[in-house]
Image 1 (cartoon, chains in turn green, orange):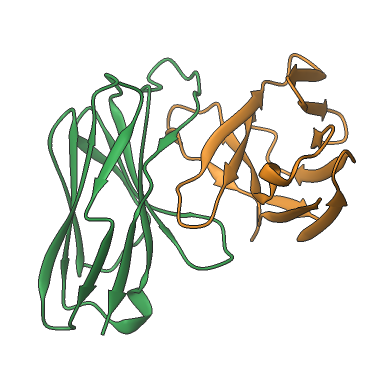
Image 2 (cartoon, one colour; image 1 turned 120 degrees about the vertical axis):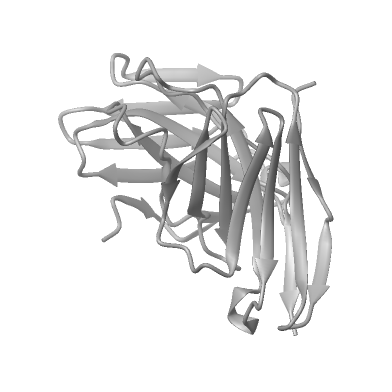
Length: 116
Length: 115
């Protein structure tokens, strides 16, 4: 299995809703990431998990709450979002780099989120 | 501050032609330089990557050229096909374990290959 699977593919939510995005990989990768991508822009890093522990939070507003229940799963909990949070949310994974060696990311197809 | 600068923003090439995308970086701690291809509605897919100890890497019709002294690298797509029409992102990663595996993307290049 060489894929990162994201669900749902599309999500429309109101500003008072609570929803969650899910990400799963079975490649044995120990680093997992959440990225946000606006139209015609590069992906922007939100969070990095290394060995199930949050290692990087790129000053993301608290209305986004990540969770890594185990080495294969990554969730992003959403609450009280704003219309400007509408974007493509991408999950990615990679081999961990405790040795300092960098490896490529494998991205999922993303969740297209619309906040109304 | 954009740490990886990519040009051009868009590119139109005829089928069979060569597409060339350039990237420049400032951070000398970067030591891994991947290129990603993204189709509309899909996530980026790793296309090809290079480390600074080599000056060129070729995989099929895709070639990365790397100039460490100039801190520049480029992607060449030979014999461009309509199916290559996509957005291409260069990226870079630092060596530092403290920095984590934090990929920095260029701004992207939209490539259109005309039949």
